[in-house]
Length: 156
Image (tube, rainbow, N blue to C red; front, side, top):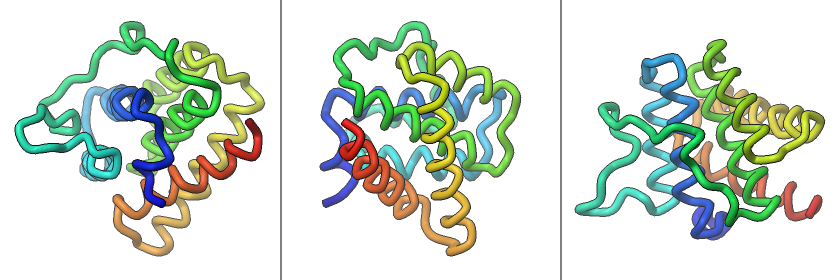
């Protein structure tokens, strides 16, 4: 099973849009953030010939307030949140603006603070493992989604 199989169709675009919100929070996209966004887009099947590339450096994400998560269940909301946390770790520096976006996102996704801390720990652990292994961004994102999906399935 791959990441695309673990994420509902409804959650895929929302997940990438949220990751781009975090990446753009400090108004600059680090090369690692761009690589992470491209990897996520590819893993989610969102980079298709003829489609607008949501991960392009010149793309600007929709405002967080305009995103609609009402169609997502609790598992998908948590999956979106853990992927946003992972994106905040992509360049190994979580900017204050990224932290602020994550806080607003947590509230919008209705993820409580305790659960958000657990999801953050998972994202940080997986990012650190990626850095140590010098793994590809695609493999790291795929691992993140698969491990998060297993963890969330056990909870829900």
